[in-house]
Length: 135
Image 1 (cartoon, rainbow, N blue to C red):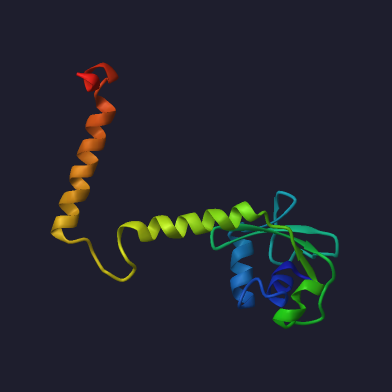
Image 2: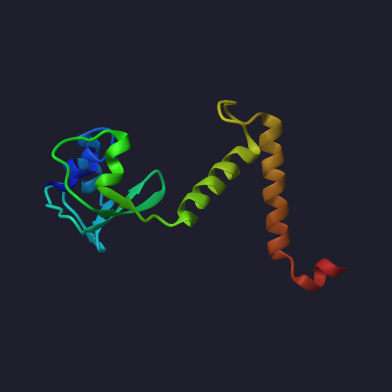
């Protein structure tokens, strides 16, 4: 089965065209080899799929005849993605939410001044030798 069709069948991508584009962009690999969408995959192959800033590592157990339900995906694919990949994504989400809430729009004039002050202080700390900081 074609790799783009396989990834669509096991629900890694919502549409087959999205799976095809991911292959064309180099986000699907078979043992460090970038795959074209038409590449045939077989049981036992190990794929690496980059999606949502996570490198999913999946092992193909069997080839489905058509798109399968979400409950049946485990019959065809074994996900061996390390837990650290998901933890990194959680940290990234928290770091984005730290300063501004989603949907609050552009920074205000006060926010902009605070950001500029912070950057100026950071530059002063970098440019000042350690001996002068102690004085």
